[in-house]
Image 1: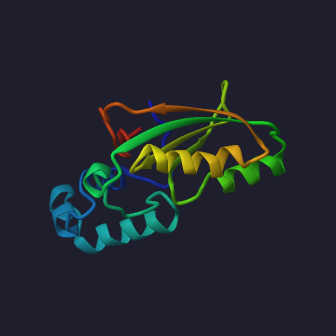
Image 2: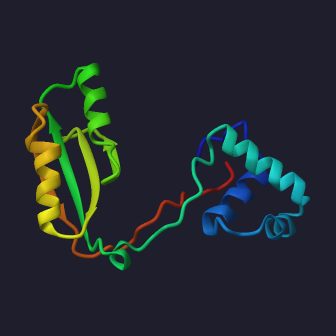
Length: 159
């Protein structure tokens, strides 16, 4: 069971569920579905944006339709993991070509999700990000054969 956030009530959770399904849903539709005024829904959405619960309003794009058919998961092991070294690695691995970057426990220190047009593009990226970085001890690439499920939606239930 999720831990309850004291900043949210049942209406906020209902709004978040609907926005995750379709971020372009009109506020009046949310208003009708949860029995709150449009102004109240708008205030709640704005508040959740201001306090960082809603972090972005984005379009989810099919990478194959824009010429980026190859998805690669990359495990990166750092040579040094002191705070300043980790900060530099986090900054280095946060460029626009990295879709997602996670600092993790286990054999690797970071797990990345990268989407590229060709393996030559990945080779150039790997050279720049990993081979040329003295703090990268090793990295392992895992090429995705099929994107079975991709999403950012969270299983929102009211605690």
